[in-house]
Image 1 (tube, rainbow, N blue to C red):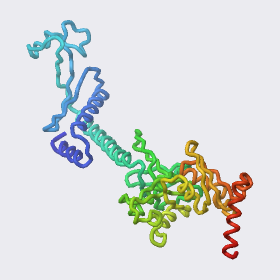
Image 2: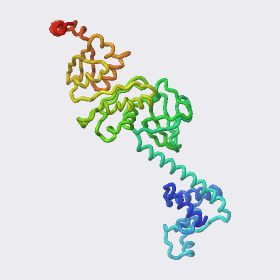
Image 3: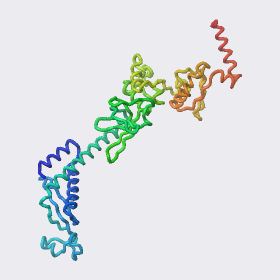
Image 4: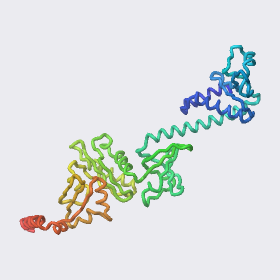
Length: 367
């Protein structure tokens, strides 16, 4: 080795962020292992690389003792005094034993260690980069599919899109660009494993934050998300500025903002709801596009009964109960939906006056 070797290591330190001392210590340990393996030494030994010149030397180490029991590990105090009279029992005597043909082995070993450390450093850099981005959105390119897992290239590494995190019915073709949500980053011996999702509600939230400037600057806040990936989603938004329409900001001019997100999610329908601190109004809005005529709430049990016109009952419940299910997820309330006629059957006296009033209004209007 030489000063050129040290210069090369210092360049690596600057480029890859690998500490020079850590690298040299790793090379010393590897050279010691190579020495023992190739020269059959069972003695205590150490390898030292000069930090100024890059020269390396191998030393055996023997402990000074009164009576020698193992000459490979120990040296008599009388013999030690012949080397240096200042040696005392318990001291360690070192002798240089660098083999004459050790240079080729040293160079090969150093190369292996450096390559290994570079790989480890790059893996650590990638891990640190993505570990700090859990809960963030990334854009990658579909590379291949292995055992139903879609592998997505993210620059220097790949992300895994597991079957459970894929949108049902969505096709992933080699070379396609796709946005995903980082749900977990694991550190393994083979490098970082990055797990991403296309179904996580966080993906929808981050997509809106990318598309809507008012969400980025904090004027509008996204309060809640409920999602059934690939089918329908609901989001609740709130404006901190009374002059800014939170729903309109998310929809965008001519619906451009929300349409961009719908396109990214391959046609997933999105309902944008205005969040309200009043549970009754919030729950009524959450059932959009259905219109509620009345809401009863039981605060302690977090239960709400929503009354809708007869002709909107199926709309409020949704196909296979989806609209009602998403509304419950969005609000955090258990929602019981009843039509006006169902309520009239359950509470005939209470609803009789209501129907009479409606009939009178119709007559007054000449209907």
